[in-house]
Image (cartoon, rainbow, N blue to C red):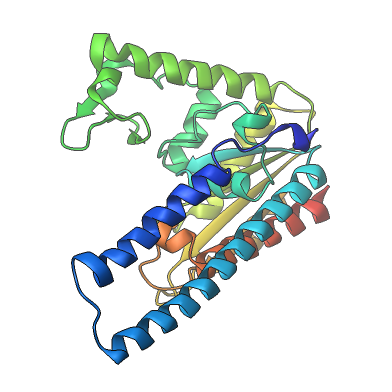
Length: 300
């Protein structure tokens, strides 16, 4: 894997300079044009602001460097592992990709059906077991105008990344084409003999979680009888929420692991930029991915 031939063209000197100039002009607006700084206290505040901004810039550049360096290390470290998201939402794809445990599209990774939509865990089990037999039935698909997205009402699936009425036109042709391609990618992936790690992130508490995870193991084993795989369930909660009980004793010694991770603060939303790209959000993700990496290493 040649990582040095995959430059990020969206981040260069011009982009950084334009972003910094825009930010500084907004600051200047409130001292020079819209609001007028006059007093000696105003001058002191300007000096203090310069120091504070400089410290924050250095802090964020260090965060960026750390994420990029660890991503590079993980891409090499887990280059022989296929990490596959099984929902329930996008976290199980997004965060492992950001930290390099899963390859990104730039490195040839193909999108699977559970990557970018919301699928309840029991329906994930059903779809894998049935080879997606009733996944894209037009009679079950609806367009929700107020949310600008499509749903499968029978399976309680929300296609929340396919935004716009065009996905519902001509009998949901674009939606069905997009997801049929992703289903084919998933089928092809299951047929390989590579070691795989399937990652699940429940979006709500499931008292019967152990049962669903064992069912998931059963249906994947049926589809891949001769190949090794691990299932990792990442449970997340706010600090103020009651911890969920351990289910380890209910998993019958199967290659299923559970990570319990506590959000940095109550109301934390993993995909919102002010949360996930704040220093405590980055630390939360890193800790969770370190635990995932350790589980993979101890399994393989």
